Image (cartoon, rainbow, N blue to C red; front, side, top):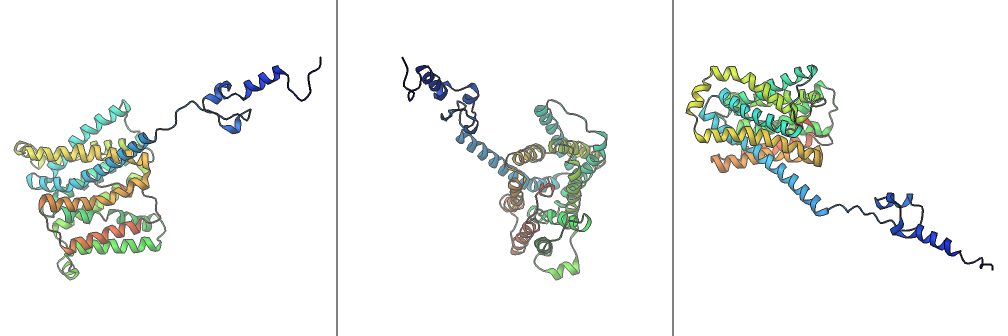
Length: 360
């Protein structure tokens, strides 16, 4: 008996059914093999769950909230710094801040990585330079300057740091000066002049900057040097390790002048409010602030996370007005707007990197 040629053999139909039936696909298909690799025309049904969109959205919101909190912490450093500058010597305040920051960062690093590895010998010169400029020098000028300079005014002067770094990169490192960069640098420096002169450039030319303003300009010089030195160090050392070791080195450098400047007496008469401000600076602003910022860079990228840095002087000014009752005159508002606009123009079409790391 011959079967019709136009009908497949029953056994052949069974084999085809097994090949085409989705449920009978191979383990590779069940684990998510894509259609172009399939043997048959049967639809592919992956058993792995689809990404949880709501969980992803929550994670992104959490990252943005952490970045916003970091901005508030860094803006608050000017308020706490202004308070501590009236309560104790600049070296005492700087050393106690970074003693607390170093202890917290050591704890955080060991908790995240399980160990605290020593830097390689070739990395020590760079880390010493970071500690000398970004911790020792910057904070000595920071607390000394805030003894006489209002927090909001100081924050807007320091906001010009990225412009100074951009200028140096063009003059010394050979980076191209495009029209946006030139315009941004000029506008930012004009804004600093507006803030320093109080809206009267002639007064600045005749009388010069005040001693307190010169100390805050020392902050600009120190953090610009820290930023430029950090470019090579960060290429070999993780940001968290670099911040931790620079805090340890800078704290060690701050100890002798702090001890000679009345550290013991300052600690003895420090009030509860003083210690709370020190804890805020050490743990929240330096510890969590930097950690959450670099966490945001890992999640969002440097460009998107770096946008938040432009909000730091704005938050500082608002906190200075609200918490300290500092006046917000038109020269401060106009000069601050010029500084921030100039920074944005100078960084146009540039990749934000270490220059956008906030001074703290």
